[in-house]
Length: 225
Image (cartoon, rainbow, N blue to C red):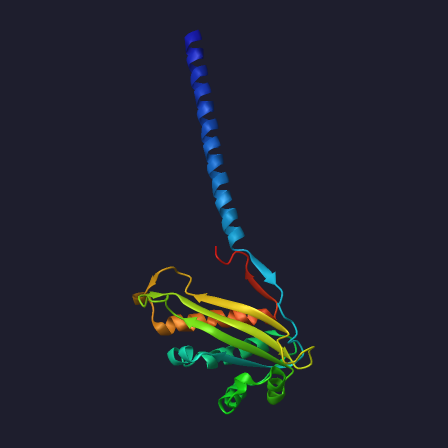
């Protein structure tokens, strides 16, 4: 009888140990899953970012875009696309702003030789606005330098703001460097997309980044995650 009891006691103790170990492992796994979920939630968090420049509020403004002849030759629609879509973003998101019709701006630049070298204050006067958003697009490419077999879009510009009523209307009141990339896939092969798709995505990304300078918005807390 004593042997029987000892055997059962030993088996019971082993069972308790096994159950405890099982719960311990399960607990570790649960903590591990919870940690992964927590990391994913953190990576997906959004944050509010304030405008870098809020001087377009309750003003009249125009968007002008310049670039070099190489970009114009390889991407003839880029200047008009940025002018139209950046104007639209500012109009939709900046409180009280009145943005000059980009078609009028493009027509004026087309029929005004040498406008790029005008004093900035005179540019405001010619366009009849309080502010000019000046976009100097110095880089716009769809491939890595020297490699036509991959897609790696990059658009970079200096974006300046002219204030006709500012301290010096012939100098930028504020200036920013803006760079956008597309797609966010390293070493994407040429067969995976068309040039038109990459250009469209790059333009959308650039206009978003440039537009965000002028109004409060929501961004990913970890954009590269």
